[in-house]
View 1: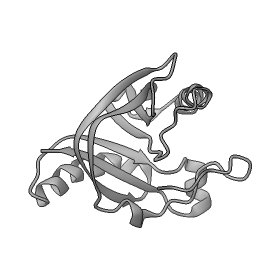
View 2: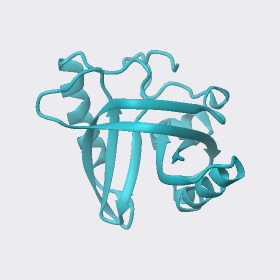
View 3: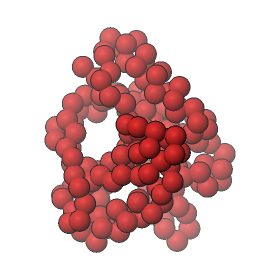
View 4: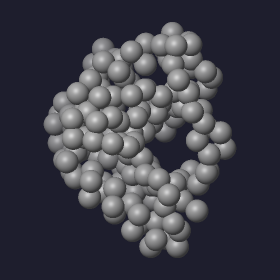
Length: 161
């Protein structure tokens, strides 16, 4: 869905929100490599190191899912879980399989709005006649690239019933 990243000229590709607005994903055992990021009141402390380590292993195994999204869940103020889709298990990483129906909503704004977007995702699901049981976020660009592009898009993923 997103264009291939030219690692020599850019960090994050420019994001097209129209491709992600109000989409539905039906996953059956979709495989994700997972990593834990240390946080201080939901502010990531070592995200760069964790993602770099994960991506090196995923690249070495030639396992990256072509439809790249990195989902984040913040179960506590002290840790966030990162989910990167892979096409096969990667040695040295933990994995989970996600199943179910997921709906998306695109947000634009600073990262500190995530707490409001989290609550909004439950309301959005209700407005669609569904009940959300879990919410993840896809932060589409790093802070440096968000500044470069002048927009900070975040996609909410709600698991719904």
